[in-house]
Image (cartoon, rainbow, N blue to C red; front, side, top):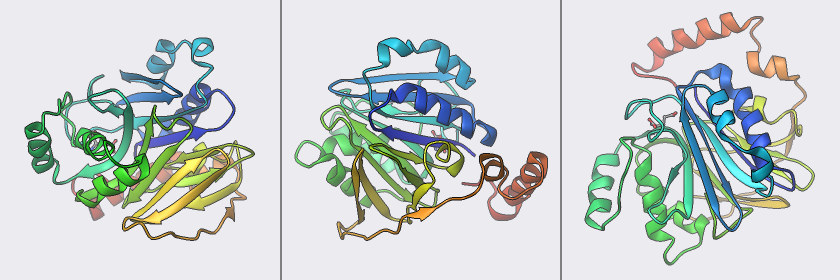
Length: 272
Ligand code: GLU
């Protein structure tokens, strides 16, 4: 329903992320955002169409960023707005996070974070996660901090996280919300949907529930949430882009009708 994309490699990340978000557009969304990292962190978020976000970006000036994440949001907690759009940032502006899903226990986590002096600026359930990562990141690597934060989270998530202190690294994890990683030549792409990956590579890894991946342009490490290393199988996708977007349905409309029926059958609020 909403989308995540991340890129790390040698090409300009902004164009690749915006193009990837457009591939995910058919799933529906209310706002979109991007976070780019090198030694600095650049974040832009806009209510409305991806075109609004695209117009706000100076692509030539952003060309030095070779890694980043993007998100299309479908609001569950907090109205659609610029500030509630993802990625969300840590208080110190070092870390950014995009999230699909629902953090069920965000109120309890928020209270604990406010007591520790964190500033929560959005009305989303998501933002608490980036502040927890910031908290643990005082004494742990980004990957370990994400792992520790996710051990505290109840609910569903597909997340992608970047930090200006570890440029070129994307941490991704999921529970109950899809994520796929594409392996290219000196580049990696993570996305919630294969349609954002297949124009770059057909070699993919399906990320499992409760799995966390530390991604660099030339390799990755996979763990469960207790830090055990996982071995992964690289698979080939041989569908064409149109088929992937329609996921086997003859027309988009049939696919949308099917997805709407799932909303009523499986979940009263919204599907992931
Ligand atoms: N629950 C989050 C929010 O409302 C994520 C929504 C989504 O999956 O797009 O911001």
